[in-house]
Length: 595
Ligand code: ZN
Ligand code: ZN
Image (cartoon, rainbow, N blue to C red):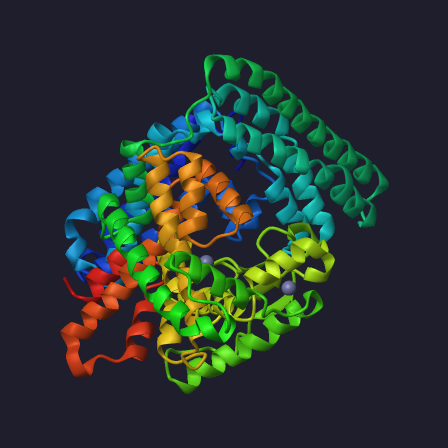
């Protein structure tokens, strides 16, 4: 069934809803004596997801449900209305059947219920209050998914190309809806949209065309596909030109301010992070942590000073001394051509350390595949994890590492100074073992598809950040002061991200003060600080998620240590914590502390 406002009408929708509803009633009628609400709920979760995908095609595809590949969701008002209607009905159903019997469910299902319910609330918030469809033109970008379909071998190249062709047949409607949605955007998101869309042309007129030529399709199909590729590019070009012509108008009436303001920031924080802390509490914690880190760093800088500056007096300004020592450590790095291999060699060493110290379960049957970043996504992160979706658990997880010898020498050198021999080890802990990759393997073992799909970003990032500290505490790197100092600089980054995010979006911090904070107090290079400023103008709350998750996990561990005394075991804590999938730390905390 196509979800398109011409075809997918209200009647179909009601029918679909009714089927779900009847199924549920049936479940009850047949098994009411079993009094096992868990069993109903397990079945309902599948229905819930199937219905959810029908309203969220793109998300379905990102999660590995490629049967939606040929259908492009039109972001029109009518579809938004249907989505809201769907949210309301689903919540009514959740209320009616489960909410008042929640304590009859096991803890895993209780937390799944919460995640489902909260996710619907979040979607409603996006549609009715946050309303980025009205002010963020960069969300109207179909290229990313086309690239994914082109490069993921979920099917033969020929069928994938036909999926793409069908998908592209909606593109005119898609951009017509986009134009209608956009009211007064922000200047920053408009510029981003123009840049990204212009950057996507080559996907349509080069990559896609090449693949069409490579394929074994009939000539006539090849011809039709090329037509739709060029049409797509043309439509996107038109949209870009429309944005450019509107810029003049928006300049005159005044763009929307990219700062979210306290009320919306608070709401977004609650929906996205689902923290045990309020926004203000987290901000204050971050300010305190910054001070603690500066003190620790200055101790280490004093200790290391004469090793690196034997004939120079220790500077009066502590922050300056730290910066000077960090500058020396940055010189200790590999050559560009050695970068990928160095990462490759470090991963097994990290696993070995975790196993030898008995820190948590490591599944050696699913090794991480370290590889050179595929060309079409190079140059974004330097190194990052690319994981298989929850429906595709057997697929490889890749650690994409950019081959730095393909970079301009200057860019490679600056990246290598940042990812010097100390920082690279921390990066590998964070991205791979026991950070993101290890967490993912544990999460995929969790029986809950719900948690795998509606995973909490702050828990995921928080775990990676927590694991860095845990490894160093357990003696990885033999307590080297250089490694600790580098770690503190890295950790300071997520602390300052939190301060920056709140200060800019809630307290109106200007660019100069932001750059000062990042360079003087965060020891960041100007270029990095400029990039961070750009990021804070384009995103909200996300920058605060790392420190929040880290702080919640670290504090939960300390709380449990206190509570359990001698019976506390680090390995059991880690395994248990990771067994709940990527649920919000708050939810895991409630279960683990049994409150
Ligand atoms: Zn160098
Ligand atoms: Zn991360």
